[in-house]
Image (cartoon, rainbow, N blue to C red; front, top):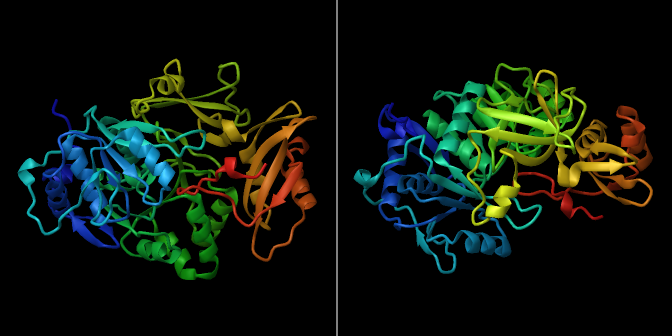
Length: 478
């Protein structure tokens, strides 16, 4: 049986059609193939290759050229600090840099797409979708140590995108809009390779703007990929701008990922636009694990059921599965066809990431009786052992966000001589709202149970976040 093409429309099996657009221009499938072929003809014979992942057409051309060359690509965050960038370059040891003209890194040859040069189509051939070759080396966020290079194969990426396509009824007729960074799997794999694999279209806005998103959705765009911070801002603007609410209402599917979307924002978006956001859950190492289906029940706080070919367990400290009762929290373990092939140059870390043949995510969660997963945070920062209880920080954060005066919240445990750990909350009040520490403590005690109430509430103007909008709790002052 012949292997399926990775991108059928780039293989010439379908007529030319619009493919990608960025602030610097747009390309159809034929033009995109020509751009990638022109670059691929000038690549070195060995790799990996660094990819300057800016929101430009050149990034997509470089991505496809790298895939055609068979050399792994290392997406670089254009906003990375010098220390982080130096670590990635030292660890991955790329042979060249694919970047727009003017971008230079010490010791690396820069190869830039020349739009005026003739395409070398005879030297351009993409791998098939079942290829075990490493496509990407994506570096983790580095919240628990130096960033690690995650090896993702062509086959893993293809299998995961196909599973998402089935879950979301995602087809070539869909037009995706997003403004996510392109150095990570959400923006690059899901948001860029996903539409291309299906033969559809992607519009990248370059930077996030609620009114621009709504305008796209009111026009040709049918789907939006975004993170909770973006949906929070969309809801804020939709409160005062009916045209933004109307744009959201026109979407076929609104998808949120990379962190939990607060129940309060779920409710606001539904009230304003009639839309219930679909959530999904994944990691660099596993790609997407679960997703709420397009035709499935959309429950605030839940990230859906496992995708096809994905198995999920939730285990206690003894390694046994916890009850599937929607309440008992344990650690999430995953086994799937879309698993990474290891951490670059770190065999011991790779082996340590698995328990038997199950990948240990480090995330906390609970399973409902019908298989929906609810996340409760990271084990390293969000499992709080206080007064003999095991408490998930995520449910306390959700309770705080239900208070009308609170816009953002983060919770973690700090050492306590009496309780073992005491629950501390950092909150960002809404503009003009007044609320006391005691009021918030009592609010959580009434919404959940008294032993889950914060013992201390700290008021701040903002929470530390990474480029994907995830709160970095290790940066919260103890």
